[in-house]
Length: 291
Image (cartoon, rainbow, N blue to C red; front, side, top):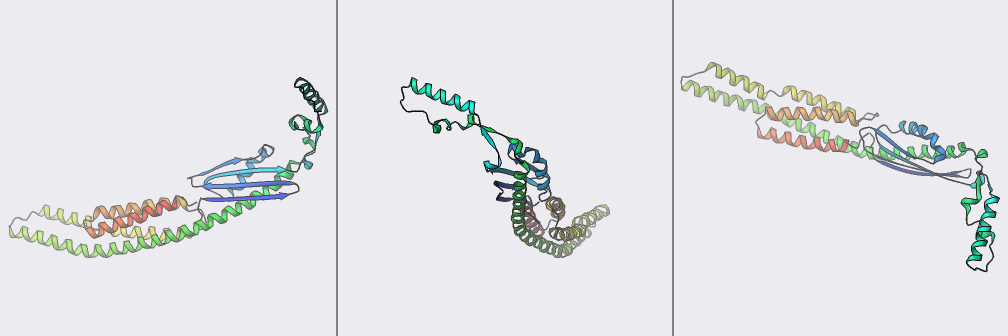
């Protein structure tokens, strides 16, 4: 079991390239990946997304990639015409402002955007990508480990609450057995009263018996709950993403407890149903963060 919440940040420095990969993940019903990558690696976005999908199947995932390059890897040359133009412009400005200091090379190189001409022909983008790819792989391992640790904590909590639901179910089963005897006695008393008055309405008697049988029979609901809770326990141990499966299963469990509550007019059973629904709601809140 894995949580959908996680964070990882990895820096790699190889062959004059420094790559930083940061991954954040939050809960979401589906997988939604947002990539922020350098322009030089924009053609690798699909590959980045495919790599992420191999590790993360659900959640809102934000991947930020930044790189810093050793400029010796990225050749450039000076634009001499621009340098001459900058020099002449500074000389003319000095004359207008009556500044006596001479224009130096330091003054000229303070305008680097006008001096450098990048020559991308000899630059190998794959060198940059290889470092980013290694950093991405390590970041995914890191966030996966984080999400697994969070998942272990969720597993323990949900397992305890599943056990409590089973205990509540057992109490309901025991209470319902006693309750049947109580209702039978009530029906006997009603029949006795009818006999005393010598006014036995057979139709009404049959209706009362049918109503009681329908109201008290929760065996099917209890059997289904037993099956659902067993399946929930097995699902929690699965190595596959289980968040959506558990969510659907909780809907079925909640439906059965609702049916039991509506059938029974016993106060103790009603209280147990409320207690069970509280546990279900707590589990439902937790699984919103399970992959």
